[in-house]
Length: 120
Image (cartoon, rainbow, N blue to C red):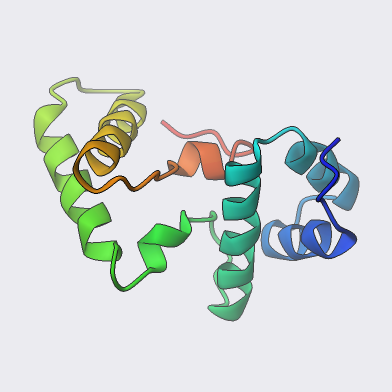
């Protein structure tokens, strides 16, 4: 269990996702520190912006980085030729690679930010 996980962290993710608090605590404690921090930050953003869909990597809401994230998504979508089920995962993987190699931005996909949701 992560030593730096507070009840406030669990509560904000619970409020943003509507997942049970014990589930949130267990889930957060299993994540690496970087992903855990992003999920907590994304939960704060979701509450402030009154979002009720999936959590987004905070870079997507950062005015300095948002366009880079969108550009990488477009580039990845062009590069990935696969079609059908699972294509989004290939695009997100390539998008993360582009963001890291080009801008040293460690971006997490919707699937990593919301592992309780099935994406295809």
